[in-house]
Image (cartoon, rainbow, N blue to C red):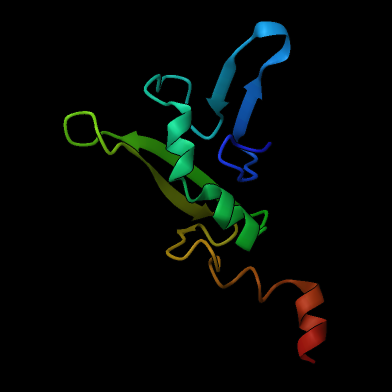
Length: 109
């Protein structure tokens, strides 16, 4: 679904049907009630999903408190389920899943 800031994110959800105003980030757990839609402006997940569409990547996020309530951000960690390690560059991926892709193997031969 498209965020109010124009980015396509699979974790953002909104329901504005017939007066309802429900917006949520499904990447966060429901216990974090301090999320608001303005955090989508600085979130890196839509860009990472656009750069790398590996199905083995798992995103985890928390809202980090800022100074005096300002500058709150989404803190996101990326985990590869296939290699079982943390991904340091989510735009590229873990590096091992690309080598196992049969389409890319045929191109290199």
